[in-house]
Amino acid sequence: MELGIIGLPNSSKTTIFNALTRGSLPTTAAASLGGKLEFHSAVVDVPDPRVDRLSQIYRPRKTTYAKITYTDVAGLDQGLAQRGIGGELRNRMAKMDAFVHVVRGFEDSAVPHPLQTVDPQRDLEVLDGEMLLLDLLTVQNRLERIGETLRRTKKNSEEQQALLAEQALFQRLAETLEGGAPLRDLELSAEERHSLRSFAFLTLKPVVVLVNTGDAARPADELVSYHHRQTAVLSLQGKLEMEIAQLDPGEAAEFMAEFGIVEPALSRLIRICYDLVGLHSFFTVGEDEVRAWTIRQGATAVEAAAAIHSDLARGFIRADVVAYDDLIAAGGSMAEARKAGKARLEGRDYVVRDGDILHVRFAV
Image (cartoon, rainbow, N blue to C red):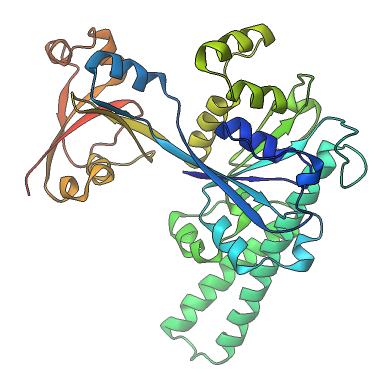
């Protein structure tokens, strides 16, 4: 999964990037790129205490966590839609699974706000509006092309029927955007979503609005109001979280306890994004390796096998399955889990659940 970190200049999104990736990119006002397009990416492990526990049980030679990529996107600001969005930016953002929209909710005289005052709701609406307009321009351009093609298309032909169906879909998209709502608010079938993939609509992607409250902890709903589908809103103390990210686990735990932080931003954000994007994890275990794998919610056993290796999917016979909680309840013993009737054989159409431990039987 790749998450794009977006926000207005000096919104503190690079501070958030450092907090999430344990990075050290410069965060001063002087480091602002003032509209220049630039990307910084980092791949990090997805924290999962279940992987830690399984590793303690099996003591494997290797422990592998699921991975997530964070990309700090610089160059998004007011007037973006008027300037247009280049191919590189659109191509990069099209590949992202969701956006983390960082909104500044703190005063800092050393870091001037590009719009002079700190107003989280306004800032959220400014960049959100730019993305809405970019999508609307794409929709309008497509509707124009469909109209031109229809005038040259034979009546009652299959081509005409396909174009009319696409036209109806894009008219729905236009109505949604013109009403000020992102495309993710629109009910779309799986087939419709698939047909829109090549257009890289920005407002179709899930969004986490992340309000950086600076030194003072404040609930996000005191600062912003944002109610849309596939959206979550949360707040954090960015600089504090960045400092925690630089500490070793023991020091970080003490630091968090002192400031009343239950878990670091990294863990909270990943859990929220997994849910918004519709992903979850299953595990494979053994003496060689304990590993977490990421699949979409609703994926079948054969799809999980394909995530491990294509050969396992091609030669799939059955999958030995036990739920993580059942294995722990059995003292971490697979044999005891079988005695308790908690380990079972499942076929290719079994829908894998979050936390399932799988061993795929296959023959190629």
